[in-house]
Length: 135
Image (cartoon, rainbow, N blue to C red; front, side, top):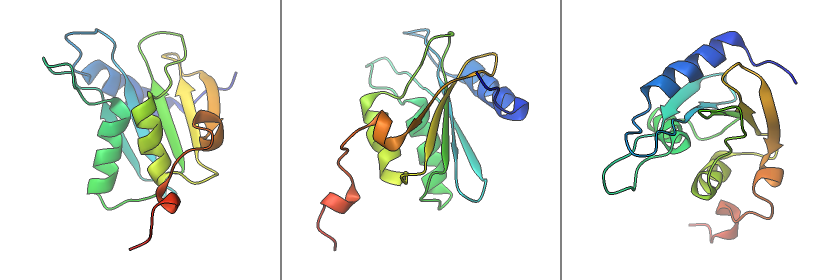
């Protein structure tokens, strides 16, 4: 397996440690990287009514707030050594800003790239903006 860049891993670990997960104790961190190299970091945030915010949604919100609209790479890190892939909702959120070339990588806490996906392998036959009428 390949190793992710150490600075990227450290950023993910920092976000993982900042996740607010008092109910599940399942921290997740994510980085959204745009084609120009700009990166946006997110961590999951749980709330008492169980409708929290996923790490990927958190990072995408920061990306959109900064005016970015396209993803080159997505990095996700969970609490263990197992694959911590984006949930179904986040797969659709990623799809909104992904291109066919976008890479989605699941990273271990030690920085190993556990698996790399394309949008097609992560969410095959996805519904996207092009299926909606243009305004």
